[in-house]
Amino acid sequence: MKASWLIALLAMLVAGLGWGPAFADPFPTIPKAKGERCVEDPQYMRRNHMDVLRHQRDDTMRLGIRTTKHSLKECVSCHAVDGKDGKPVTVKSRQHFCASCHEFAAVDIDCFACHASTPEAKR
Amino acid sequence: MSATTSRRAFLAAASAAVATLAPGITLIAAQAKPADQPASSSVRWGMLIDTTRCSQDCSACVGACNVENGLGSHGRPQTDPQWIRKVDLTSKRTGQKLSLPVMCQHCESPPCVDVCPTGASFKRQDGIVLVDRHICIGCRYCMMACPYKARSFVHESLENQRPHQPRGKGCVEGCNLCAHRVDEGKRPACAEACASGAILFGDLNDPKSEIAQKLRTLPTTQIRPELKLNTAVRYGGLSI
Image (tube, rainbow over all chains, first blue to last red; front, side, top):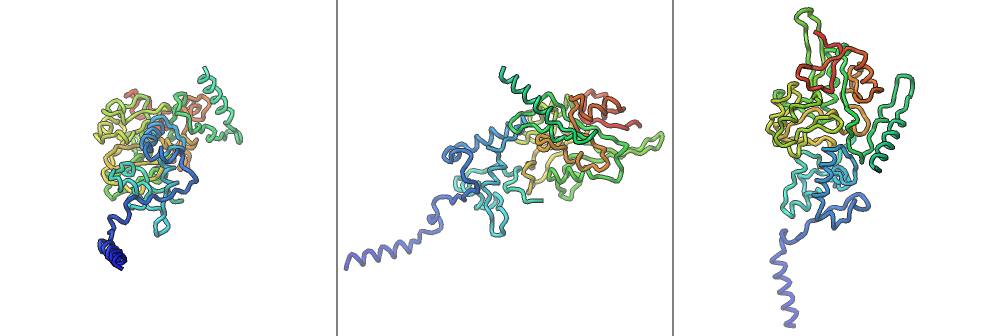
């Protein structure tokens, strides 16, 4: 009898503390991409995507090499997340693939000051 | 050795791909560069603008440029970016009126590249002069150096940029001859939009290209030739 009371009390305490929103979601929710698999191993991309993008950026900008494998444009279109209105969300939304992790890691992304953070709607 | 062969093979394939649809009509798409190949110094892209075909009340090229590159107005024309502008000229002597589009002239020795302190303003191997916004610090030296007033500064935060044309506040920008289109084998948006065919785009280095043939046979000029910049944009019918 005593043990069951203790358990009930503990349960109430835990509920009272309420594991509020700060604890409810300790890790970022990363939206799933549209493609079957990433252009590189996901573990590699998590750590090195910035270098991959930077390398591609210089190749494209300086030399005019326009392969799509490592292009930001392709990342953005494969990882696009549709919002409530059915249109892809911009980087301002926490739902955005890049923003979801970068907000969690508290690292600002400069890319989207100039680059489009959504694939282009058909014109 | 193998690099030489592959380049030769590539050139052979490229020239073989030039299809003649009908006498006088050649498929420009055949000049498309493979996506994994860098721009080559064997080509020099340029434009020939026939001012006699350019009408004063037409600004299709400017409109097409704005749409293609996502240039919008903030309602403040003094600071709105402008990659092409129409210039109307009247001869004081004869009263002859001319109208012509003026954009970056893609000089062979570009003053904007000379003065850029960071190397952001640069010339691609195929002669296209453009700004690498990743390293542009927005000092605007290039704007002062350019004799054609071809560059603009982005004064305000932007949204809804086109994916192929990233643009942002604090950087200088200008006509890049639609490098993203040219790399796909297309013409720049202005040349495509020009209904009167006043803008001819092509490879100045290729003696068989339509533009090179016209430059050989027609009287053409550069704007401010005395600066000896050897511009890639040439004008026909410009003699006031």
